[in-house]
Length: 193
View 1 (cartoon, rainbow, N blue to C red):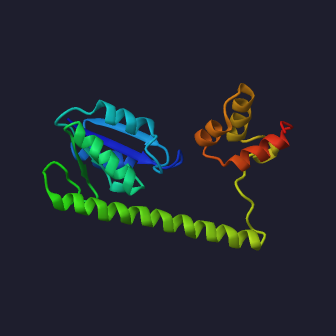
View 2: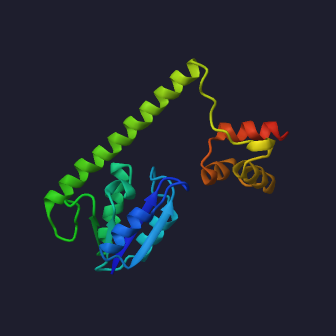
View 3: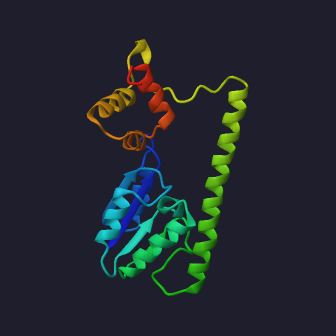
């Protein structure tokens, strides 16, 4: 069976482009999620890996959709191979483990490393930009607590509700894609600290 793995980094991003291309490539089953690719702790990725059967082919739109880290990428590919399944990428024609070609493994390591380097450089540039903006007094951080008219945003309201229910700070921050500092500032403004 041909299975598709689709991932975007955040709720605001659209998966339609990936879905259309993967459907045209013959995918019958889709595993789709909107979550960061910084680690392999992704529900749909884990479900896909668990449900793989011998002879299945996993197709991704591009290698960065599967993983942002060379180590994780290699681990995922090994888990796919252990199931007797294989992996292909639409964006990188060289990524095709359906045949036992040592060149594919070599290229997988090279291009996986390049994807990891690109991500690292992007984060470095982002941190540098934030530092400059802070020094110039232009950086305000994420606006979480209020929207128009002084009402709480949906994220802020959800964070406060979950905190009252006893959910951990880590879970709240991870689920809502907010920093712990942002959450603690919100809770302090709400009188929890």
